[in-house]
Amino acid sequence: MFGQNKYVNTAVALSSVLTVSMVTLPASAQTRFSDVGSSYWASQYVQSLTATNAISGFPDGRFQPDAQMTRAQFAAVISGAFVSGNFPQPVVREPITFSDVPANHWAASAISTAYSRGFLSGYPDGTFGVNKPITRLEVLVALSNGLGIEKLGQPGELLNAYAAGLGIAQPVGETEPLLNVFSDRSEIPAWARDAIAAATHYQFVVNYPNVQQLNPQRNASRAEIVAMAHQAMVLTGKANPIASAYVPATSLAVEPPTEPPAEPVSGTPTEITADLIASLESADTTVQQAAADTLIETGAEAVPALANALESDSAQTRAIAAYALSEIGTAAEAATPELLDALRDDDELVRALATSALTNVGLDQSVLTNILVSAVQNESGLVKDIAADALVNMGSDAVPALGRLLADNATNSIARQTAATLIGNIGSADDLGTLALRSAIPILADQLNDSDSSVRQAAASALGDFGPLAGIALPALSQALLGEDATVSQTVAGTLLKVGPESIPTLTAALNSDNALVRLYAADALWTLTEDRDLILPTLVSAATSSDFRTRELATLGIAYLGRQAVPALPFLNQLLGDRDSRTRGIAQTALEIVGSNRQPASNLGIIGRQTRRLTRIPGAVPAVVRAVTRLWR
Image 1 (cartoon, one colour):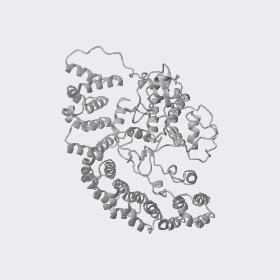
Image 2 (cartoon, rainbow, N blue to C red):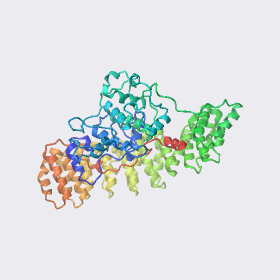
Image 3 (cartoon, rainbow, N blue to C red):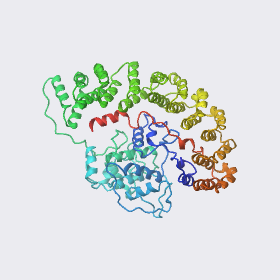
Image 4 (cartoon, rainbow, N blue to C red):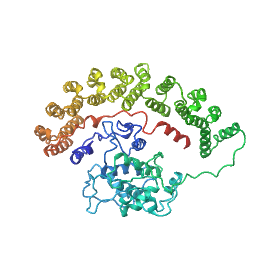
């Protein structure tokens, strides 16, 4: 990624004349990250913000949650998170030109947006500080300023309405008592105390690992920024609340408004349960939700009535019943037959929530696995996503069944693609030494010969999640690398890079491929593995003379990323200045500036990552069951 190496200033200029997409992958393609496990404190925040396209991960499958973020990068997050959709932030001032933000700067538009909406300002010397790390204090002040709540004032009817729905009272009282929740409140400068108090009151302060320690002067990490941005988005109705132990509680936070207490219900437990089931038929979702919550608290006594409700004429009632049984968990085992019948319901939401319930009621593991694999094979949408989530959570125990699905040629290609992706997801999260997981490697290798390129690509990507263990699949990977589909070859090259030094002979042989793109992918992986300029530079120079403009772009980009290691290619770059194509001349000029300035080489050539269209990871960015419940009560 341009912003992650030593070519920040000049290589970004090169990107302005390239037609290919930026190295950072779209959020929709990065819903699981190898360095953000399900137990990571900010996992749900990362999933939420990547799903909105406000922030993305990196080509190697990582999110780098502990990395710092520059002011320019934060401006890009602001632009993506708060400008469109519900509650769009209004323009409060005219944009200005900062001396360190040229018009062609990659973040110029985002910086202008963040400034004009009131989130960020510049410095007295007229600079914005594009490459300066942003502190936690600056993040919180920016969010408070942009949302217009920096002085605990009245933030507007719409924002107050959202806040009230979240159980947040309108601000009353003084600033200082709100700051008493922080053990290091003395480190908050006087000019920022009102804004931090407002941020605390509206609950978008997130303090990890110590909820009472603000650490205002510390540079904010990517994980901290997505957590605080998500909390601010919740306030504006752009995101769903996430329960977190790291959001400080304040004395001004109140419980969500509720209906006046109902009169005590009289009668036998059976009669009471029947009344609650009847409430599920209400047209008021507030009444429905209150009844469901009471039934869940009732537990096993409510199960027979809920099982009967699965046969209601109302799809909403059936869906709520399935949800309640899922929440009751193992105590709802008696409703298993009715839940199994609900898997054939005409309504997708009912089937989805019944699938979720069956994962919680204590079914035999083998029976549950078969149900989930069948859903992956035959369903789509929410049902398939919930089943996929459950299989990944099941871990290596699910691999044998997924392997059988993948190896079955009678299975449709979409299901086999999904099975391969899920095995890779499990491999990313689980102990790779597990025998069941390792047994999937030969099955994945077999799919590299599949007639469907999407299956081949999914299998290659999944093998990459096994790292060096995938070395046993080198013969199949070698053949797939030299195949006719460039997209598959590219994914295979990325996998060979993850396999490590064992793949060097295979990659070196690919430098003689008839396909220029294959040669470039191999060269990129070889550079990362060997840093042998003499091995790959002839390939780059040769590809830069291709008649295909995209190939010339990538090859010239690779030469530029070699920095001073590409000095022998200077005469060739000078020749390109005379090319009749103006775009080629522009690329060559930028590459000459990089190479001629004696820059250190980058760790990769930006070719594999720059072109890779990584398969959408299953499950989705937000857990599917959360999406299902959100649909239930909307």
